[in-house]
Length: 490
Image (cartoon, rainbow, N blue to C red; front, side):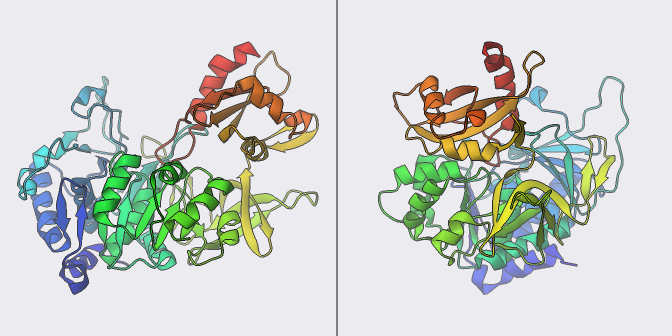
């Protein structure tokens, strides 16, 4: 079993990492300082009444205090749940409920100004500790086995959110898969503009960077200007970003930037965006395939051909197996299943009760097909409907809409009403900036490239899609808008 505490001690003493550091532009922590900081956090939390065996809900931001706190929790094998920052973090009254099995909420507070070198002497300025509040019925806290576990909520974008349960050792082993896939080394400098409270930022880049002792730049609420400024000062060799940031960087980069690898994940990246961005980063763009439950599943190698990296999810991570189950002989697509040695343990509810244990083969919910010995994800299995006797993949409609000149991105949402036979299709389209286009224009144009049964019943033009922290479109928000605003007009 991996001993993360020993590993961190070894890295902090290694010659390769002596000058390497973690930074958020306001605070900096060098690897040799980490063991001493872990001791300070241990004393601080003990003084706050946190005991061995307590489970902690951690509200993370992309900052050095967050990073060091997470390192501490992993070295001590303390059970913890990753949470996004609450709104108005200085007002505890707005904090959302935490699961019943978490005894404390720890909120990492944003820094308002640059602090001095002794920032860890005043941990109460950076980490707020609150015991879990009981409800009006004075409910008892639930006690479950949480040591050595990690808990993450699913987004709930496709339904009710569940709590995913991980073994911390498996998460670290999965991180080593990314180390090997992308060849992380202590010489690398990793930019992390995606949230580390999400498994993409936490498990696929932050932990792999730690495991090799590389320098890390944590960017909170990153945007184009912030990324360009930090890129100029930090000079990253590796970055994990979203397709939206790819789109912004195309407009912001004045000349190509050589990277060892840039990884994108979350929302599906369009082929035209991939081909436009790839030469700007030294032809090293890779689209990673994964999920909250499985972590990183597959990716191409940065050295693979552009054609392969554009159309395929690449080869599975070490130890991962994939299979396609087709329902009949009339289609080459089928549902994708994954067997992963470092996958989650199962789902729990907010009270710590098991909803389901993980199966040997996990149903990803995606449709896939093989093409010339490569695996291509074609859409979501639950993102298809039957209209007029035809099976329609919503991803096919989205791809068709994105071929229109004035459409940058499209997401199609099916909605059902009692007074309408069958499901209606609402297409949310992000239009080109300043494009003189109307929703009716898009719908008319779509009728020329789609069969009649696949033409959206309504089109909604947006400047940008609502996104989840993972970078994926917030399907639930779009569906709620469609039901409340679009449906009454159909």
